[in-house]
Amino acid sequence: MESTDHPSSRSFRDYLIESLQDPEDAAGYLTAILEETDPEPELLALALDNVAAALGGECDRQWVKDFGVSSKSQAVYELAAWLDSLGLRLTVTVK
Image (tube, rainbow, N blue to C red; front, side, top):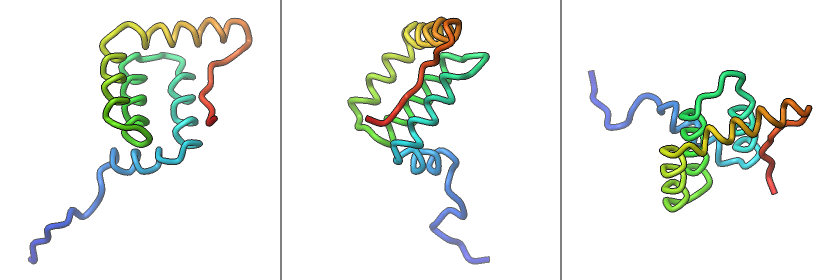
């Protein structure tokens, strides 16, 4: 069998980062995370990191790391739940 220097398939994260380079897809991805009925703050931080990797630079990713270790992500979900109780929802859109 011949050896090859190229992997036979891409990783899912590589595929995800590539697909999130479209701002519309990135916005939809983050909105879906925010609409989770059983929110996981760590999941929001991971999603933000994926979007930062796709659209941003290293300084943006450092902000995400700081965000992920704080209680801010839980506060975002609490805001989303409060808005939901008023019949509103938190979304992400392309500017």
